[in-house]
Length: 283
Image (tube, rainbow, N blue to C red; front, side):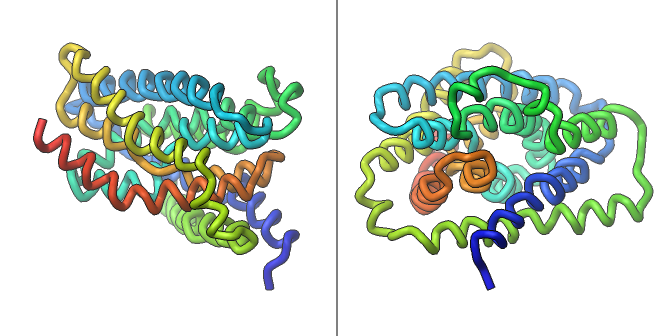
């Protein structure tokens, strides 16, 4: 039932249909003025954390011998974490609805950076991708972010029929993403994953070093809200984004390596996330 054509078509459907629906639906909520301080706090903190992770990714990957396509996957894995499929459940367990609302605000930066910088660094033809161009900026992902921001800021409520459709369509992103990753992983030898020291290095930086650096930096930031502090550190310690393999396959990167990065970081996060939460609880 599954072949390369099926996998490529499914990747296109996720990137251009189901993910934009998920983005718009998640941002179609009421703006609570009482949380304005926390919203601004998490918004600015989220930007700072992403800029820090971008810097870390370039520094780490610079010292790793690899091809251009491999370096792109490594950078993508270090910058973009699996907030949607792992981060939301963890934060919901720890902080409830308030935490989910703040993660949604912080995750705006993910949507902005992944549809701009993410496409540039993970694609092949590195020379052509070094400069931003309108065809990279004007895509369904960015349009959905813009629409979502308008719905979030202004007192606009979409009709029930539209919100229901968007919710149903967006909810397919997770299972379809896992099917695409599974298609790619089916062609990979698991032994190759565990023997790749570069992947272990990326996993160590992604799950341990990066959240500890974020923790250390945020501790010296004055007047940072406690829940914003905890959520920012936890999100920094999530495994590589599920989109790593999908974006690599769609935009000419190393999709197999992307799936391997997802596999290893997700597996290791079963140990590192509880340890990270324990560390935060004992500060």
